Each structure stands twice: as C-alpha cells, then as structure tokens.
Image (tube, rainbow, N blue to C red; front, top):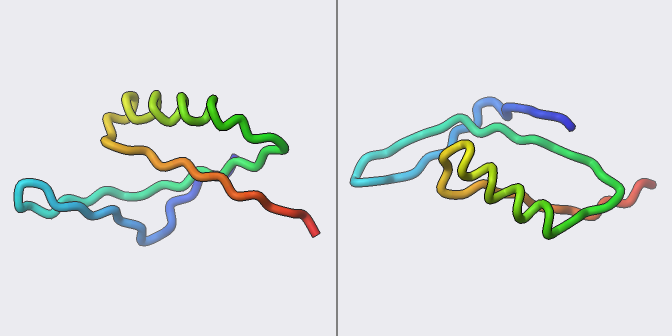
Length: 65
C-alpha cells in the first residue's frame, strides 16, 4: 500500500451556501485479485469510520509489460 497527499490537493464542496474544503489523501493498493464485494462493504465501513458522505474506491486492471 502507498499513501500520498497530492499537494496541493483540496476537496471543495458547497453546503448551506458556504464553501468547505478538505485535504485529499490517496491510498494505492496493488493486488493480484480484486474481491469486488469485499471492497464494497469495506468502503461503506470507511464512510462510517471517517464520517464521510462518500468514500471513493476504484479498480483499474494493469498489465505488467
């Protein structure tokens, strides 16, 4: 796993006519297999733990050359 803050990375959103911001952190995990159902459940757990409306997890197939 690799964690990085892509500087300057800010998440911006508007709520109640006020602009809010957060620092974005990216975690990269390289795995041989992808258990889609497990990651879906884990994403929901992370949303609760970090009190987020949404946590984004995406998967990309990579071919080593």
